[in-house]
Amino acid sequence: MLSFFNTPLESTIKRQFRVPFVDEDSQKLIIHCCYHKVGTAWFIRILRSTARYYGLNFQCSTQDELNRNTDIFMEYMSRIDIDKLPDYVGSHMIRDPRDMIISAYFYHLWTKEEWAHIPRKSLNNLTYQQHLKSLNQEDGLLAEMNGTSKEVIEEMSRWNYDNPDFLEIKYEDLIKDESAVFYKLFQHYSFREEAIQNCLQITEKYSFNNRTKRKKGTVDNQSHLRSGRIGEWKEIFTEKHKYSFKELFGDVLIRLGYEVNNDW
Image 1 (cartoon, rainbow, N blue to C red):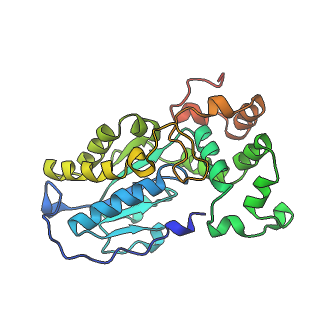
Image 2: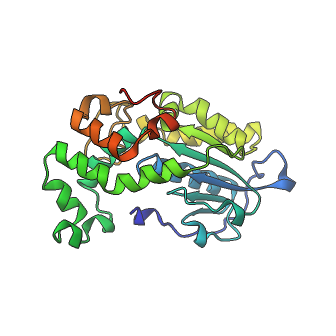
């Protein structure tokens, strides 16, 4: 999954600007952790552009491939062994798993990612995409819930949310106020005020509206940025989806702060 995000280490660029950090002598490795369909492509563009602007090295990969010269590191499945990291400062983003399932389902119907086009014995030699396309929407969403999204939600559930070195971000908060959340993010990374303002210009370039030329909520099923809507599950989930979700994931929504009980 996400094979096209396994970009090689950005080549070192001659520094044309001052480094962005408040304390230039105590720079730490910057880490951003997220998940499939939780703003991954969005953050790759922003962090890679930030690194290029300041002559820093950006890398998107798994931790075992982390290069010692990397300055900004993105781990797209949040599989991090804290004990094996150098000094770091991090951020971690989650999304309502119900909306994530919907986003993943529609994306997987058209994605050209290699993993989705490999025949599987478990699917009667259909590819993952062919399997989803063979089902109606209700059953397709159930298949997605039990498929790749199940792994992602389980990873999200296992994350340590009590680590003060990681700024915890909800996708929903970012959608509501990009500028405020990104300001807090770069402040957490210990960027100078001037650098924060520069980075906010970068984030504006890659905002949903600027990337898609659509307002948030306008659906394009053939786009990686499908709608940007919050709470879409309320319109799409059937009672069967709700029951299956609770059976599979228990109280995960309560633990992640999206519900106060399971009576949704």
